[in-house]
Length: 446
Image (cartoon, rainbow, N blue to C red; front, top):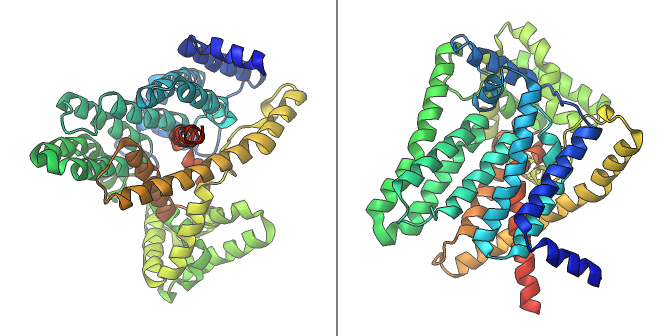
């Protein structure tokens, strides 16, 4: 025990160097034993849009995705090895940013170092860097946003407009990478105004409004482009399909005017229930997709729009069923079922594969769920404390809690599927908040 303590003290004499060495070492080991690029069904959409971007011509683009991640693919000339290399570099940078964020926030080397070690040790963090998906870039931008807000005190009304504009650019990049995060600048706007209006209402409103400009120009421009190309003002025409996933459990309640779509959808839902594992249930719409296209003779964007219209009406007509589904989606958000995406067959050595599968299934996934549960406990405690104080103390941690909880609710409202995967971009911030509360509890007992 004494040896461990002495080693730990030695490591903390130069924590940044040592945590960066560890971050690089973890990724080198993954490269040696995995040495693969993980491709998933979503990957094709990103590569397709990257082709349009590479050709400098977005007209006639079919509207599946936003251009943030495809822009990165296009920059590499669609060389997926370079994309992975860039994501790995970002992963190491994330480790530094997270350490620095925790240090600036807490002035505790222990909290900063342990938080950085925990996050970079999770297989989900590293293996997303080897996948052609948006998660790694979104994770980077999320850490960058919170680091930048804390580093330059952007919740204070005295902050400079230059830093506000830079934060607006970061928020815009987040939206263009994952459309859901258009809520983030809105959340910042509301919190900033409410926190500072008694200090200087004019300045608070002006600076928070600047935050909205670039993200909403991005939103309007991309949605307008989709309006021109596919006929719908939307970030992605997949929104209607996402809404249909949320309505899956009560889709049979759709009116007879939508009988063709309703009956095909319900037929495939029943098939999935009887023949597929439960985690396939939210994918019912994709099982029904080809038959729906054939039977309705609609284009993919038109079918998605129709599914969205039917689903929204179902939400209005059956708010109890919708609320039940939202709760299920919200609960799944904090689970670990779909947090890690990798291809276990790509491991050259079976011993390594079995060891990492065991590490994830029996140690890291349960630990991830425990961390999320602790976050929820500490988060609701933080909110209750703020309410008891009549919102007189609006600090950074309350802002972080509200942004994460708002994201979990926003996701549950519009999508049902691999919900714990949607939680991943917040992972580092969740670990930070849990660690600060655990250390605070420990110190209070000392």
